[in-house]
Length: 481
Ligand code: TAP
Figure 1 (cartoon, protein in one colour):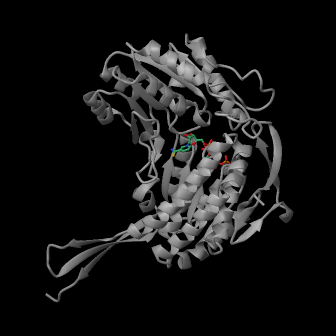
Figure 2 (cartoon, rainbow, N blue to C red):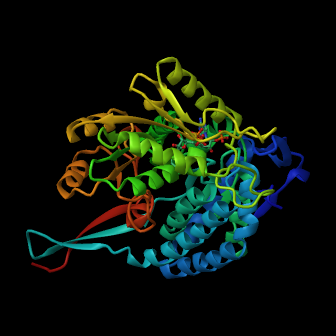
Figure 3 (cartoon, rainbow, N blue to C red):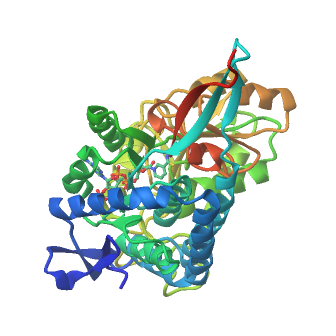
């Protein structure tokens, strides 16, 4: 059931005779399921359905749409084990984290179910008492949502919750690596009674079917999360029809550990945010700048925390912290970055190779490199893997300069117990999200978006919802004279 696409309320499986492709379990490297692939005609049918469903769906009140979302939230929560298990099988993240991700998606549905009722317009006074301006919000129209594989359900849910609340309909394209959990999530929405055509789900390679979706004039917004490279291409395609877009893109995030920091906290936060989900997080910490007076003790503590992490297949072993990487290309990329760094003088403190006990699967040990500099690939390009480079600094100005030496601007992390130093970092770091003395830069009810090459637009919070709304300004005569 989880290997089916959804077009206009009809679930489409392999029996429809479409070309198919295999889904690989990264822990075993084996294909465990096949899925159908959409072609240009399927995309057209999906956009037809989303267009036809738009008027009736957008005509409901926020409260009525909220009721569907609330019902879906409880179904998602009930099925979190089943959906989480599919996610672990298709992209490798430990089962407990996968289930936790699905539960968070259920909470996102509840949050936006309520947030819709807080879409207020504005009344603006005019220079003349005879006139008044009203500002009202309207759903943008059918939306194409293009999703990556690293948080396949959360990133789908953030878009779906906000778009559906706003009154938009959707055509969803999950990453080719993670179609199954996405399909199981969409089934929760249809089982909650969502009318036919309000959401549609198509499988297929983004570089092949993406253009049909984005170039269809009836699509009024493209909500994209993925790499900066693909995001820039999509933004160019959106320009052709002036299609609205949101682009949540790559990152290369710094952490600054000041002289006054609690080294134990800094080390555990760094271990969590550098290596969780095998570093396959847009807001992963890739570069750590540590005050030179505490550099060596920080490195030692981070090494200990890192070596405590248990690597394995969470479907076979209890207590696993890190699964395999989601695909082979990701693994090859970090191996290249490590090779490049070592050839330029870096020192590998821990990791640097696959675990000895795993004969198969895209497993790799979390890796810490010191003696690094900004001429090394790992300090410049997104790793999207379990590696981190550590450099010492002497002044706060130097720390900020190093941290900001990137085209990205998604998140930055500060560990410091010096009030004024912390304020200096907050003011001067060039990133859309700053986490101070904690490793979690994103929460559901506050805006989440990147600066510079990390994107344009917001998810989470009211800002995430308003991204699916357009403004109508109405200037009214309200008095005869
Ligand atoms: P991408 O390779 O960019 O793929 C993302 C999505 O775009 C997939 O569904 C992909 O389909 C599709 N796609 C690929 N080429 C396309 C094209 N030409 N036209 C339309 N769609 C296309 O990224 P990924 O490897 O899945 O995800 C990792 C990246 O996402 C990292 O850079 C990470 O930083 C970023 N990310 C950012 C955030 C935020 S919130 N800023 C959150 C998570 C991840 P296929 O799978 O079929 O190729």
